[in-house]
View (cartoon, rainbow, N blue to C red):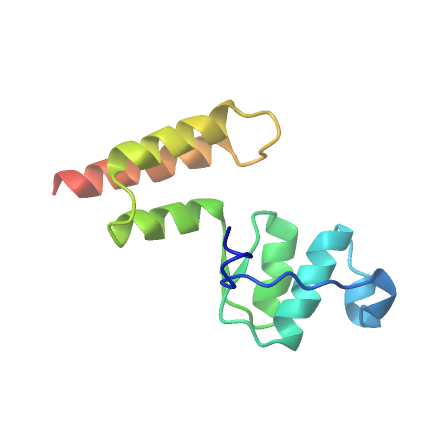
Length: 118
């Protein structure tokens, strides 16, 4: 829907178009492509969950946020209620195809719950 509304643009990139310093990194092809595009376009923010690519992006001066960071930001900006966040995090924990640490999910949820009590 966001693409149809013109809010998101899909950008293609081929592996052979990657600069050599990025091409040799021990990352997945998609991670390398996003890293390259973020650097090329001087992105304000890049979204990565994998720790290796997050560190590489930070070393290269990019502002990085992950899935949980986006969820927390949405809650802080009153776009999501705490109950919504709880449901999303429960779903993340229960899914076998999402590799975000269950412990990290629980810590984030705990911090949000305790900060909402104050």
